[in-house]
Length: 104
Image (cartoon, rainbow, N blue to C red; front, side):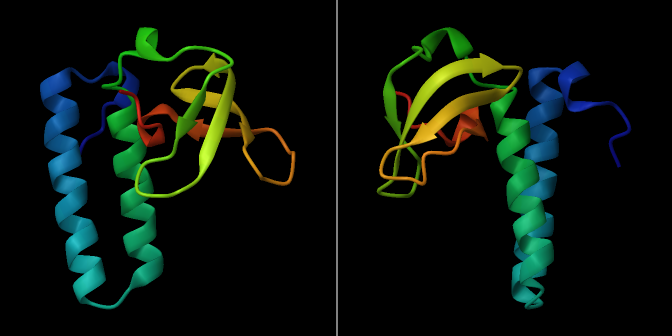
């Protein structure tokens, strides 16, 4: 397993990790262990966030969340997380991995 923190990995190492996590998620899903599947899917999103060019994310802009019909207004970036508010959400600030934003 990878002992190096994700923020210290090269792009190739991150892609290798993502491939490995997808395989583990697939196996967990096939075994019907959905909580384990969800953990691997979240880890994939975190790893993918390290590959996002954050300069393409505009502050105070509204982005669609991938694979959903939800929208998120980015107020600021901190690390690999975009902080802001869901449109039509409960009004609470939250942080989402930047890889979940649909950046065109």
